[in-house]
Image (cartoon, rainbow, N blue to C red; front, side, top):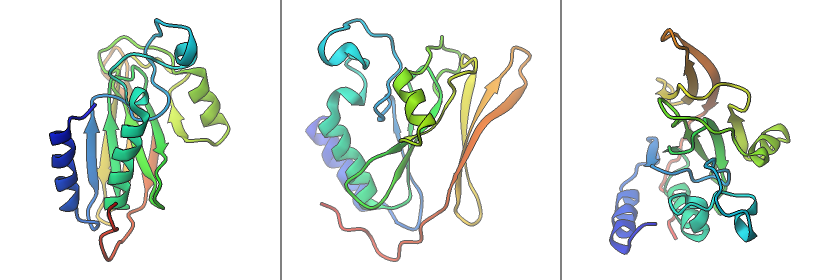
Length: 186
């Protein structure tokens, strides 16, 4: 999904990322394994996942490379993604010891799809899904990320009712890792 020059530029940016700050990476498409768009092809690999061309799931090797590059640059990274049509928080696997959190809350003003059953199952069984809004009207949802004075990052997901009142649906806090030196990049 990224061209060679985009990937080189991204690597250069990561080389300058301080492990003493949070690195926030924004993607227009979800990076986790649970894209939520409707399927058009119900055969082969498309039997259980979204097969549209604009989700990272379709580019697993490159997605894993990007996540590993970020996790290798800093233990304090967050991906913000969109275009999922349902809200959720996910742990992205990496080949480093650093875990990476993804927050996706794109349905604000968009029509909503239910999250895939596999994502609900992963959340209920302690898998890589931290939280998804499986039983909530997700047509008016937004996310908020707060970094506190002690550098802890809290990601929250809110819904907004027809009268404009916001209600917190979920909150997840990730403590800052004080990394004295930059993690070696591969």
